[in-house]
Image 1 (cartoon, helix red, strand yellow):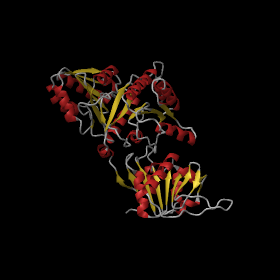
Image 2 (cartoon, one colour):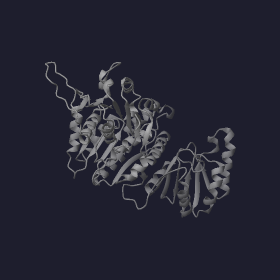
Image 3 (spheres, helix red, strand yellow):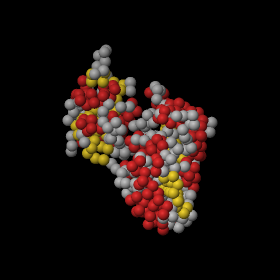
Image 4 (cartoon, helix red, strand yellow):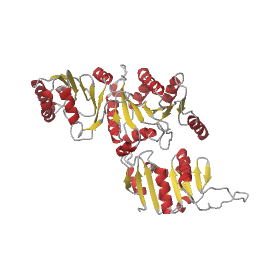
Length: 506
C-alpha cells in the first residue's frame, strides 16, 4: 500500500467510501480537508454510515470547567469548531488564519484531501506543508487543472495511483448518456465592432438574447412535461434570476440557487427540493459555481447548459450532477446550446464535444428515443461511417471544410466520385490565405472541380460540417478535406431540423 497518492474517479464513483476504507485500513487518526461546507456535512454523514469507531474523542473543557460534548467524527468549519482528534472533517479556510495554520493540523497520522485539484490554492498548500502525516491521499474527478498548476497537487499528494476511466464508468451505469445539441441563431449585434467584442460582452449579449433564452425556456418546459427533473446552469446570477422568473408561471416547482445566501438559507432551499413529491417534477436554476463539487441531488436527469463553457474539467463536473444513481432513471440528457454563428463560441462547443466523447456520451437530435445510435467520433474513428454515408446518399451532399489539402482531397476522390448524389464543397477562397499558400489552395479547388464536384468559396467561414440528403449531419471540429492526427471530434446525427439550421448558418 502506498503512503500517498491520488484517486482520479468520476462523480458518483464513491470517493467518500474509498476514503472510509483508507481510514479503516490505516487505523490512524485522520484529517479530511474539504473546501465547501456541504462537502463537510456529506463526509460526516457517509463516515457515520460506513465506519464503526471504538475510540473516545479527546477531552476538552469549557471555560466553566465542564467537559465539552464531542463526537468521534469532529467538525471544523461551517460554524462548528469541535475536533475529536480521531477523525475530523475540516473546511480548509477554518484551519488558516492569515499566514498561520492551526497547530492541530500537525497531530494527524493521515490527511485525505477531497477534490484535491484545489491544492494549488494558497490556503490548501499552507495546510499540507504544515501537516506531519505519514499518509496523504487526494481524491478528485479532475486532477488536471485549467491553469496548469496540477504539478503542485502531485507534489503534496503524490502521483495518480488509480484512474477510473470515465467512458468505461458510463457503460457501467444503469442509464444511457446523451447530448442533445440545440443550434441557436445568436450572432454578433449589427452595431458591434467585432474587434472590440470581448468574451464579457458576448456573455452579456447571450444573457440578454430574447431568441436564445426563448429556445431554452421552451426546451425546459417540454422536458418537465415529459416528467424530467432538469437543472439549468449559467455563469451569471442575473441570468439565473431571469430564467427562474420566466419559468415560474409555467412550472410548479422552480428553485433558483445562487451564491451569497447564508448557510441556513441554502440548507432550507435544498430541503425544499428534497421534500418535493416523487410524482412531481422540478427545475433547478443555478450558477455553475453553486453546484460544483459536492452538490448531491440524485433525482436530476437533465442538464441545460445555458451559457457556453470550454474546459473539459468543468463539463465533466457539470454533467456529473446527473450521474447519481436513482430508481427509475434510465437516461440522462444534456441540452447544449451551440452558437454556430459566432466563431469563438463554436470553437468552445467543439472542445465540449471532445469532452462529451471522453465521458461516454452519445449524441442525438431530439429528446425522443433513438431508433439507431448516433455517436461521437474522433479523427481516427469517423472515416468508415462517414464514407459509407457519402456512398449511401441519394440526392445531395454538402461538405463545408474551411481548409483543404491536396493529400486529403486525393484520398477522398475515390468515394466522392463514386457517390450517386450531387456533391458540393464550401471552402475558403485562396484570397483568405497568405500569398505563399494561395496557389496550392487554387490547385485543390481545381482538382475538385475537374472531378465533377461543385465548389463554392466563402470568406472567413469557420463552420465544419457535412450534410447528406438534408438529413444526416456530421458536425464538429474536423475539417473533412484537411484533417490530421490531432485530437478532434465530430458527431453524427440524423435530424432534418439540425441540417436546416446548419444550412442557414452559411
